[in-house]
Length: 277
Ligand SMILES: [Zn+2]
Image 1 (cartoon, rainbow, N blue to C red):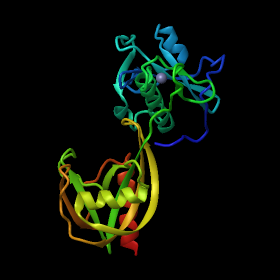
Image 2: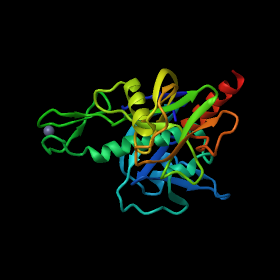
Image 3: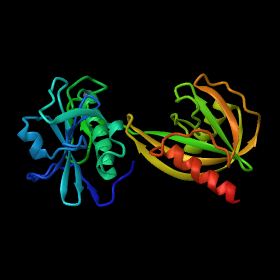
Image 4: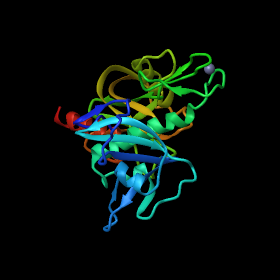
């Protein structure tokens, strides 16, 4: 997930949004879609939503081309209007245009922040939205809360033409991926890569090379991916999350994560590079 081409972000709700605005309305973690005759889901326009009598707290996201985009926080007891359905975001991969799915994921993070920052975390006073930026502030003590983004690293360790891949217990059977973990306070991403690789598989790494990053709205991660050259140590599993880790030749990879994940792109691009090298 990333910022779609042609999207201009903004947090200032315009006076006239226009009837063609895209509405990303969430009840809990499920988003409201219109179900077309052939069962294809589509995000409703704001006009369609209002026509169906659905209303909630709006947050402006910006414009995709000329069309406004609004995240809407619905109450937990809002019923599905006729012809519409609440669905999980993950079910919409490859079923709605990618730019709209990326904006729905962005909308979910804004709505989730709106819901979880209604009161000041320091003094408990109800917060209010700031006019100057996407933030909530406490009128009593001045604490400011921004939407939460949690940086996480992903590391694909290479040794010659081999890749180190691991299986977490929660993975689908037979699936392996690169190592990953959240950044801790005080760490750089590079510190985090070295620590996670050491903690998860007992291996030391040398040269790190940045690959790419991906926003991941489940619930608010920013995944930052690297390749890391093996520098020493034998695979030792000490982390309870990891069921198995091993070296795979670049031309004999196991079952990998789905193509929507940065893990898949990282592994395939690196394997292709090693096979060609
Ligand atoms: Zn406060």
